[in-house]
Structure formats: structure tokens, C-alpha cells
Length: 174
Image (cartoon, rainbow, N blue to C red; front, top):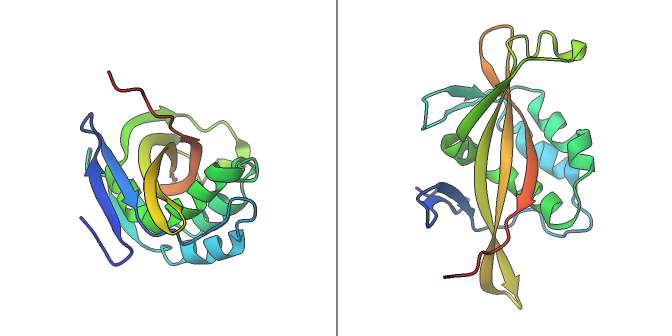
């Protein structure tokens, strides 16, 4: 699967789905323009996508752009992980599509009583970003993360944030 942003859904060596993002939209590790990322994410508000594994429909509500770019978990990100979260924003439909391994948690915070009245779901995702040296592609960095989905009072599930972004380390070949 590909689209005009040069994003592909592929399988890794274990057969797990991975979103390959070939174009880096948000450059730099030290200073990400999170307002630009937020503006980009606004384009998704009002849309919905299906998780292939279980046919769940995930909506993009108007809270997602702000939560994704201004949450405490985002502010704690640095370097490659911050750049990864920013650039994952261009592949939201594909990341939802490949989401797997759901886990459920009840809502524990009063502030989310309506937003997540029916609890929270977390799904595993993987994506890869290109690494260039002197404008030559040398490899891809693979990241794992979790999509945080709230199950709202209206019964719909909404993408709320992308959490636990972690660069995967390469494994020696045997």
C-alpha cells in the first residue's frame, strides 16, 4: 500500500506489520516545530480509520492534535524519539490500520470521566524512518510505540495519543 506521502505498509522478518515512512516532514532532533505538527494533525480531525486486525473503527476527534503535541509524555521526549513522534503524524491512517495486541484499562482520572467513560485501549504499532548521510539513504530506524485510544461516553473510540515511542536496537544475525 502506498500513497502520495510515500508511506508503505510492509511486513518485518517475523511477519509483523510495519509502517515505512519514506519522507521526513519534520526535520531536526533538537528543535521540532510542534505547532506545525499540531496543524498537520488538525487535517485528520473528523476522519476515521479501521484497525485491520479486529475491524474496530477509530475516530480522530478534535482533542487529538493538542494531546499528541502538548502532553507531558511528548514533552519528555528527546532526540530521535521526538523526531519519530513528529514524523509518525504523517502516517496516522496506516498506524491505526496496523495496530495490534490491544490491552484495556479502566478510566482512573476524574478529568476523563466523559472522554473515556468506557476506558482506554492501547495498541502496539511499529514504524520506520529513513536515515540519510550526505543525502544518501543508509538505513531505516525502526520504532515501536503504543496508540492510546479512549472509549468515549458516546460509544465511539477516539485516537488520543501516541505513547511509549522507543527506537528498536538491531539484533545480531545468527
